[in-house]
Length: 450
Image (cartoon, rainbow, N blue to C red; front, side, top):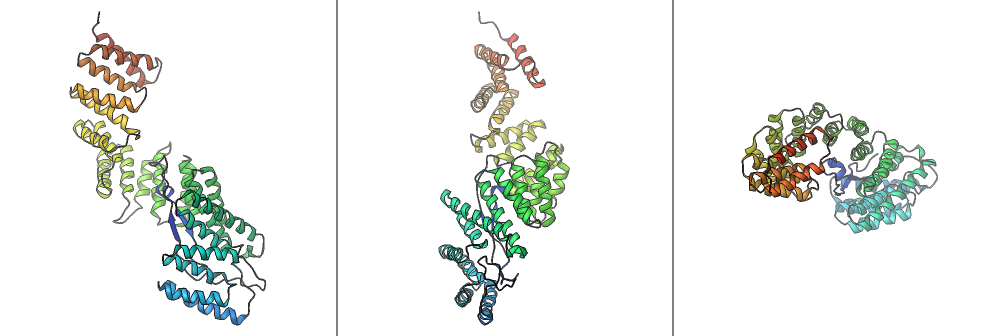
């Protein structure tokens, strides 16, 4: 098909509670808009309001219209939008039955930044061609890009109407037009994106499966499905969807990153496969996230040097991140480098938000470091911060007990020891058993207050 072929994309910027886990493409999923239908290729003597079949008009009028239209497309490609607009308006005036000319008027308005004019033109097309898919889809894309609740409702209506139209067209003469299935898939993918934005993942899964079914060679159906399945922690199925997307667009870096996340977050982690996927992301402008994920993969393999190097590259390319400060701190702490671990943890604590789940752990570890360095008052301060962020934090309670013991505040030491012995089960995990053992031993050392 002739005409403009590049997609018009708009980003939806919803943040999920699973921000670390969700692929970037799901957190800001592109909505797809047709950038222009070509001259309608299937000839028929019957008038069609779908926008896919040639209207029953005189050959002379159609020829004149196509001349204007082709000139407009050429000017559009050369980004001479005002001149292109005049050609499309002329074509639409001669033959208003031809969908493509009127549709390109809306496209030009968009390119010229005249969104209100584009909306008005798309609405006009929906009135003139009530069975069409494309104008309704693009109107939905514009509404969804506004990121407002009322606009999202309008977008939902347009996408659903586009889908209903497409399903009906496949029952009629247009079932022989391959582009109908492609455009129907696009509308389903956009509906899926909107459902993701509303956290309706089960509905989004159905929409993306429909998109992939109608257009098996379409990237966004498979990729969107993979993202939804990933968010639902169905990693094996997500990998299958991502691999299909990768077959369609083998050079798409987002797929490589998404696959790497599947390998890292699934129960059967495979850091080597993750590294292999990430190495496919090439070039000087690799996303900083790649280095973060490489750090995770090497950390799982026990390669501290490579993990540190990649986390530091992430910071150089993106700027300091609380998330990576935490990881660097953990690498240093587990490697026995308490001095650097303390530095990273303190920087993390200064930058992290109070709802960061890692913050309580960091305060506990800072307490452990202070206890190791015999700075008992600092240890108490850090342990107390940890207990304020997490209920029943028994390892922090034990740290407080030991710190107060060294400060000779025996009543407080005993209070926290008893909290540990009361709260930690007798027949618990190995870690819980060790904690009870340490608490019992410390209780015996606390002098009697009689």
